[in-house]
Image (cartoon, rainbow, N blue to C red; front, side, top):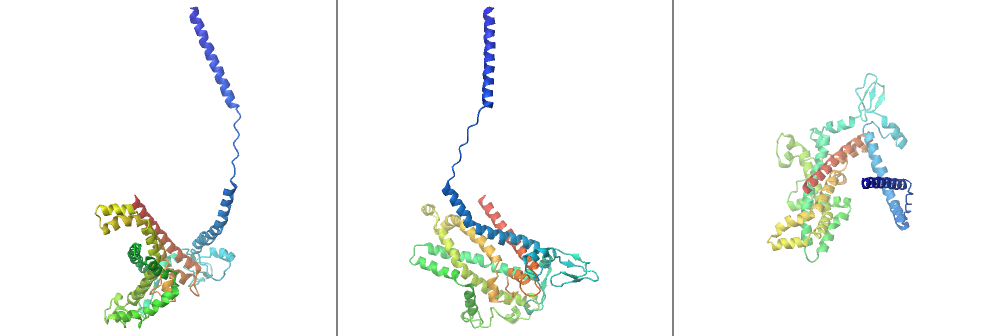
Length: 398
């Protein structure tokens, strides 16, 4: 009995001592002084490099924000207004952003027929989407001197898409020449320089040369034996070209004949001018193709065609994708070449950017608000097509 009591006393004393120890530990933890953090040493050289890096990047950042993002925001605001070129100051520009396009003028009200601005009176309905509606509704009543009306935006947009025919043609030709130049042949570097020369030549000089070649008495007609074909001037229709008397709008409309011939000349010139830059990119890409994989395919009995499609093309895909994206964006913005071939924003050949110039700053009675609307519509087209290309690229990778 005594032994049992002593055992219980020992157990109670042990529990008490454990409780005291736990209390002491918790008290010490609560009142413990946290260790001082070591002061981080600043690398002076790295800090100086970062500062200089931001200094050199600052002009680009400021320029991008001011000339791209700020301009984009102001263009969006401007496209819903009736602002004209009557005042050029930035203060007046911002003050006039509230000017509306007006329609349905009541008695006693007067509206400018060009800009849509309310001249007098005050009873009219504001129409902020006036310019966007005009993009899809305006027609040209006498295209090519034929007396036939055609949708204006459709004509200019069709011209732009037509010029993009040169993109796949140029890529195929560039791939062919790049593969030839990548082989171990004498004078390969000389050919690369020769093909690249048009890229650094003046666009004006190239257009002038092609206009001489494709004039009615030029070398092209002499080679083809077609002295009666006028490639760049005149209003020829398929009826007049072939001596037909068809009454169809297609056969008697010069836009589909003369316009087609003129646009073909511009496509040929664009392909020739841009071939060298694409070749250089493909040559650089071919130099990075895995040679071990090609040798393994040759050992397995694959012919040159299979090696090209199964080994070379997959390794070249990043270069091909880059060329497609940049070529589509550049092709949709074509302006200089058609304007140099047939000036004054000729509807036969002018691209969609010609509409931006025509309504934005093209002459008297124009409105920057209209030009902003036309330009933003083109920006949406480019943005959607670029997103679509990247979506296709992501599906391929998956």
